[in-house]
Image (tube, rainbow, N blue to C red):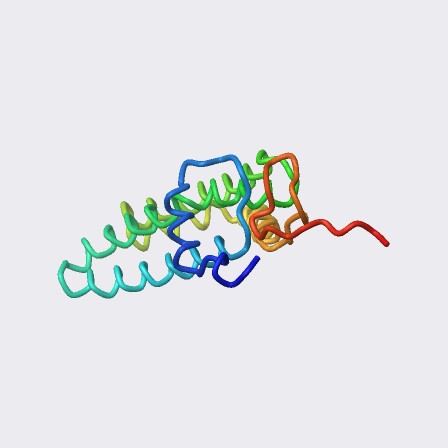
Length: 166
């Protein structure tokens, strides 16, 4: 693959957004990191600008809504990363506990304020470590290298050729 064929991080981030509901095929590290940095930048800009134009209470809701929008491509991206490694996409179900924990804790904060969040934390402290274990497993799956050459899920996103042994 030449440098002209190699998409940059911006094109890779846009590809991840376009494939938000695409749970087949393969995605490389560049698509993951491109979208991660794009979402980080978009989140920072969104939080920064909303803090100037809305009340603090509304700003909290804007931040939660922005986080939900930014999160949308990650499940499909994880499935495609798993496919790149030759693994089943069912392992993406490891995203469910951390996502539920985050959503419920955010709702507890939104609806109950500080007291609601403290009550949530006190009632769910036993679930914290299994949720963290799922989060670490997802992170590991995101970072593991993909298989070289085509696999049962499609062509190698990096277009690496399989070299026969000598």
